[in-house]
Length: 292
Image 1 (cartoon, rainbow, N blue to C red):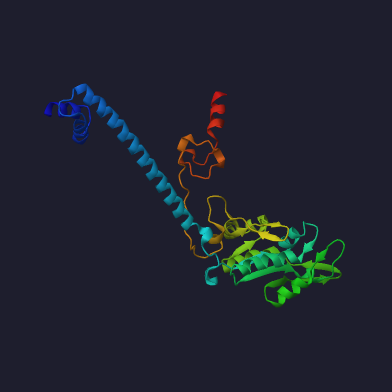
Image 2: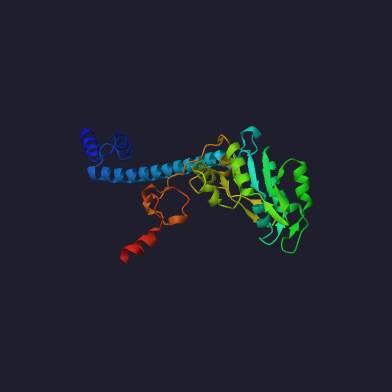
């Protein structure tokens, strides 16, 4: 028995496996027969272990997916305490003309934008519109739903920037300066698709503020839609962008499980540290480039 055991141990088999085989074949079994049974037993054990590892891997992956779902910010309530939400300053002319497809000053567009922020819990919302927009609509300056402006003014949401007539000529104050100045002083958010390049060049602190606090948007019919990533893919989410103090921590990108073998290229939603800031080409594209 001792000789057969030492022989099996040298080949990497355990004493338990040797005992199982000897119980089956008997202590007088030949070395070759014992070796054949040990090989069969070893193959069966490896198969069982592989299946067990696969099941464990599947269970871990499922639990990981469940934990990601439970941590998803989409399930969290975005309407937090209004004291933590930044003041909103809306460029009324920009929003109205955008909703009117750059042909009509649509006051309804302003209302849609205001309602979007009020529904999220923002208490401090201000809209700036030039005072001459109170005048009657003309063919060269079409205005629709003008009564909305008066209603928002009564609610102390809309502010008309000054304008007057001097010898038949209209003198208009620069409403963009009101917008940027109030947003800067209140540490708020500017809602506009304008870049305010002229004002950004006036003061360095204004330039930095405009770069970091400008919220662009789109209108899909009557739906006001700001982007989910106002400062780009690696910037804060919209929820945290609109807050003074982020409540939901920004989720860092998960490394791609495929690593360098990933074939999704720039469409891959996972992080590729080996690619850095370079355009994320797919493996197929890189092979084509190398062959050239």
